[in-house]
Image (cartoon, rainbow, N blue to C red):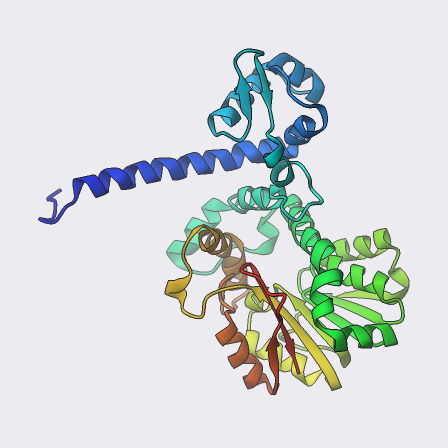
Length: 356
């Protein structure tokens, strides 16, 4: 193949090394998923350093696999090796991201989701060629359980003590006792937390994917809130059967088949004086500004789940990064809302809006 006159060999070499580094990152992902699934990082956190034989005995895995995994993780600098003692260890600074599954810094759930998201890869490649998408049913139940744990960790740490504290009017309504809907409730973690914290209010969770509703009912039972919660299979883009004082959507609008119709339905079924709380994945207003590691992960999750599952349902397929602030304001205005306030608790990962 003829090379262009301006071909930069040094740049080509540097990029080749970058590709190799990225391939190593992909390998680390799968090695970490093994560690998360088998509790290997948690063992280090609980029991300290170990040689391969001791580690295998402690974790109940085969010694040969233990040694190879330990060497691979040490090569990746996720764990450390002491030649003098022959022991491997997990640095204290690595415990929270890899072993403390209740800490906000924990990354195990996202690692699992990224790995499971590549499961229907052949279907995804076919969709690239012929259009359409990969249906939600193509993903294993563990994918959705991991999704619940990932979002649940965020809700456990932020929903009541941070997000709602930035919305005093919403809190006052919840304390007084109002009708609340969570559109696209998934497995119901956010709704269950609010139902437990605000027993005077009545909560309904809607989701278009039936298996999620089954999980939401189980979540409500686990939280002891079956008395003030109900769940229904429903596509909010088609219709919402009743009116509510408060309506929430958490990471949902970008997944709607027809986002404009969905927001119009929400506006239509919000009672006078009601409030709509919209939470979305943070994105730049201009697509070319979405760059770097976080944006790469978001685009990857969009291609492997959010966008493709929406397209499978004949939707618009906005994708994970399809609801930047500019689009949020445009769609809310089109739906008939007159006030959109971006909350101060928004971060580089999630953005929240109080809409009236």
